[in-house]
Length: 379
Ligand SMILES: *Cc1c(COP(=O)(O)O)cnc(C)c1O
Image (tube, rainbow, N blue to C red; front, top):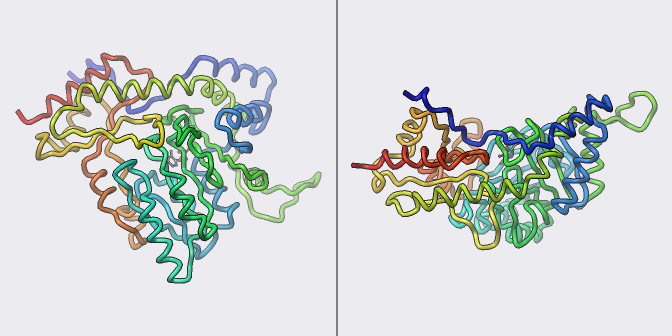
């Protein structure tokens, strides 16, 4: 019977309409290449919107984090502090640089890096005589971390903060856009993010030198010379001109996408918010989440079914949902890495389910998801 229903995806791409116009421009000018006027325009339009003065458009958010860490001098033997509750793309660049990640648990207010635990960890690093080289908090599911608290803690020892705002474009923190105020900020335009270029990322900063260096590294670290001269090792991380054309169209609709994601969240919350055993991801009072994904917590003893039972039931009805990110300190690949706290993100992983939140969803689609969840309740 499931085939009768079209599949509802977690967060599929949603084009605004103008993307094709910019792609056409790129074709007509024959800039079917990395670099070109669409990339320049995309960077310009992005920085104007987010209000961070310098930016380099890249092939992915992971590449953006990698260039940020490399530009900040993270290297072999260093430690970098990260959120445990995040996507692995936030952390693999630490390993690329030969450094070691240290994980911090979430707080209950925002599900982001707990700044009190961060302060404890940094004090303990200080006692040990080895301060972290950088701190990279994630803005999880489109909600900003408490950046000012994190900056306060880090400014004591001049530790740079790189905001992983890959999921949070369009969100705000104390009236600033996600990522503003950090030493550098990372964004992603992967296929399931709030806006997408099919795949892509961007690194932004107030520091022009940092962005100039990251741009240099992203294009194979080519020195100024008519031939190809290299005195450093770089990467092929630049965004292509065609991909940037899609991004320009998507930037036009970001406000609408945030409104729609928030509307979807509210719709779910109205229907399920009073159901015993279901809670919704909280919104911290300091900001406005983009509600990239609507996330619920299911308490099985009260609700009558656990997270996995609900997820499997949804899957049977051709609805894609997904457990909350498995914390990094629980990942086999990071076995043995230090973690401060951990119980909160473990609980969020155990009970958390991300519901379909794509901005092209109809009310009927959302009702379908809600009905399946309601059917899972203990009779
Ligand atoms: C998507 C994502 C990334 C990585 O972005 P890519 O463009 O997929 O490389 C990094 N961090 C977080 C938190 C993400 O959600």
